Length: 337
Ligand code: TK8
Image 1: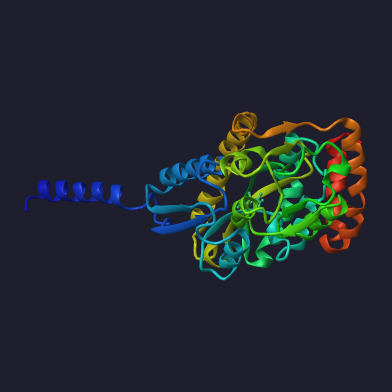
Image 2: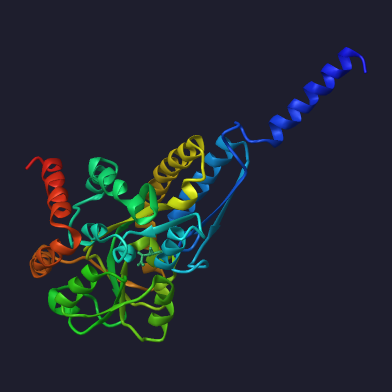
């Protein structure tokens, strides 16, 4: 071969290589399976799509990012255990069902903790969020970011909930979480812990009367088909955590780890925006589908808040008194108290 054609062949080969191979020597071929309990139409779907696009771009298409919806890989808790044993890469899970693994996460389940989304963002994306994320490796998990699940509202098939009294006797599905069980028992309901994937059928068969989730979940999981009333209780804001298996994380290069962190934040911003844009739309849709919606009076809300105040003290020790104090100090500072 002449020198010129050797050069041309080499150039062509390196062009092919730059298309077929990852963007950098520090990026290998990877397959990531991410699971979630919600449907793909939930704002988590928007977040995952944005994260996938970011990963594609940063890895030159070297990674396969497969999402599994509606508990197809098991519920939040099972998936999180699979991460800890290194058999699944990633999960988008509510913090609440995994308090049995990481007790400190119970801090987010305390009733009426955050007043609005801006407070939640400031706490979760700030020092307090880092403090929580720093705890996760000890449990075999890496937290890439906090996404939005949102303020939770009660739905049921018995009556509109307009006062504390109206909770009485309802069989309410709660997440597998002691603080939620206590809160709903204190409100006079029969609180039944259950994985998210079982909720629709339990409502449909009337094994339970009620459940609580943000409007976007009531909408995208079609709970309006099996529930009649939705009451704006906004009793808790539970975040989603974007968890990665620590065992698998440790096989990734620093550059790859950085791609995951950055793309989880790209996904977060898209996901939160989608969640907030959809919330009112979801409320409109579920009422158009026949649910009766109500707000609660300021007096009724004050009475409900007062009733569950004792939950803070009863769970401070399990969560960690220092964790609760730190949260309260961070909120006080935010509120200029
Ligand atoms: C979805 C769950 C769900 C949560 C629940 O995986 O269990 O009620 O709010 O959205 O994380």
